[in-house]
Amino acid sequence: MSIYTHCTSEMLPKDSLRNVDYLGHFGGDEFMAILPNTSLGNSVIVAERVRGKIANFVHNIGEHIIQITISIRPVRNIISSIK
Image (cartoon, one colour):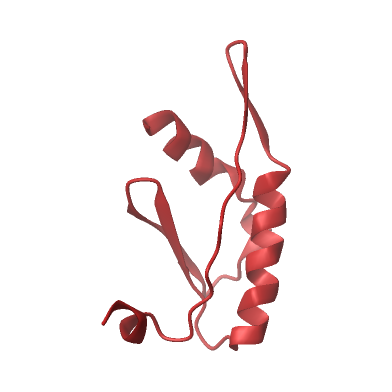
């Protein structure tokens, strides 16, 4: 599991998110991005850009080639979603 977590943290180019956005490890193999002052529509655009960059990332580990797919769920208010 740690190999995949390590790969995921380095897959996202720095220009994928703004300086005010936050990307953090949420647990297990899950990550969360917080995009302050972003409409739900714009968050879908960001999510698709991030998904595309990760889908195009190829990581070689020894003789193995690792490609990763992700699913993203934009949420308007994370606190409301948790309840």
